Image (cartoon, rainbow, N blue to C red; front, side, top):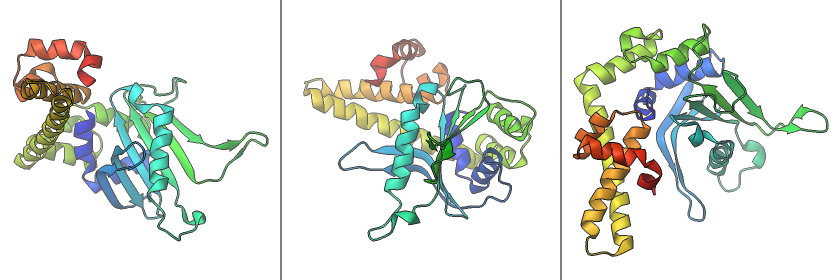
Length: 265
């Protein structure tokens, strides 16, 4: 699944619950609330949009991130996400001891940390005594290429299925079938495409204004198309599909993506 498609799968709370139960090995986990594309704005530092932020019945806050590229799941990014969860939790006057547990989960296309494990659990430790530092925060990396015959491996296999009928999880199969094979699902995905295109347009307009050139509108339009193409490619979409959406020839889209660093500037 591309990260764009995965976000729409996660809009179904039952799917989020199922995924977390498998990854956290907690069959009784219940998701009480969740926000997709949670926007953490900062007036003084860097803002960030998190794919999915859920709260379970123990008040644990969980961030699920799906990354097509391992570079987008660096340890320092995981640390920043963990900090964002903490920073936006306590109200004025609350005690630090009231901080809930937090968990940041990165599901990556490959082995995000490079040690050959299907899943990694990261916690702070007190080095001198080799004991856990009980701050209630931890990070998990999951390699989606791991498709062993285990609950986690079968879940990751479902993530790579192109057809709902191939999936083993009935919960995920139902949601994927809805998104891919019903009119309602088509509308949901079209709305997502429109949102991505609008984001790309804003980036293009800002770039055109910043340069202050007479051809600002044309430059802005091209920046829109490039930014949108890069976003869609990052979500696993084929060049031919991107070409149809942004309205330029496939050869030009391919040229943009071959020089992706330039596209993303």
